[in-house]
Image (tube, rainbow, N blue to C red; front, side):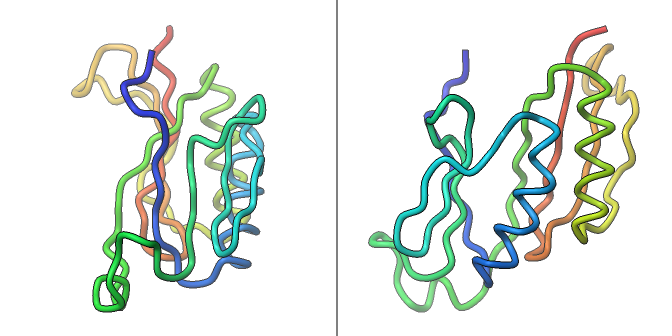
Length: 131
């Protein structure tokens, strides 16, 4: 069970971000489940676990959002095939390669992941921990 309820990242262009994440997350069964002002929520089963926001949030100052500081977000995959499909879809959606699908035994013996850079420089990963 995850220790987090949801995560939010800033993006520079909400429409560009939506187009990217709609395509990149689809193979993982993650879709848009909510829109609110300048926010888009993604998740499964109607609950938004991952948010993108273009603009100032209540807790931020204007100075804090002048530069987007890249974050690392990792999504759970249900199989190696889902990791592969995530990577392919993300690349087709305009991502930059940051690590093709494959085993990363230096993290753990069955760690199968893929890494891409989204349009705002965020390091986005999909991982499967099974065999």
